[in-house]
Amino acid sequence: MGPRRSGYCRRNRKFYGIATITDKGQIAIPAEARKCLNLNKGDKLLVIERRDGRGINLVKDDMIEDFLNKLSNTINNAVALN
Image (cartoon, rainbow, N blue to C red; front, side, top):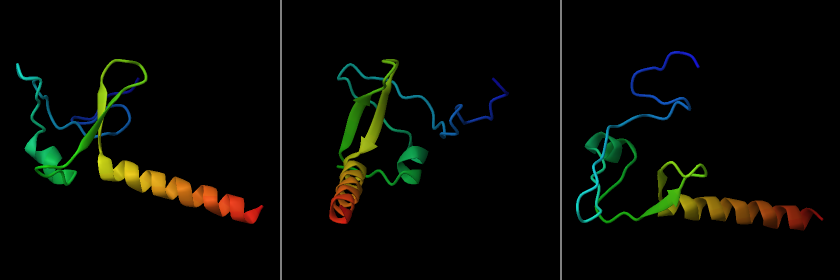
C-alpha cells in the first residue's frame, strides 16, 4: 500500500473526523461533512452495514430514491428495446 494522503482513505473518500456514540446511541456528524454533503436538520439517513461487517455507511434517503428511479428507467428502456 502506498502512502496515504492526509484526510483521505484508500478509496479517496474524504475523512471528516471522528464521531463518538453517546449513551443514547447518537452521533454528531462533523460540521464540515454536513456542509459539503448538504446534510440538514431533519434529513433522513439510511444506516447500512458494510459488507465486511467492520462499520456502517450513512446514505441520504433521497440518494437511494434517485438511484432506484435511474435503475427503473434503465430497466424500462431495456424492456422497450426488446
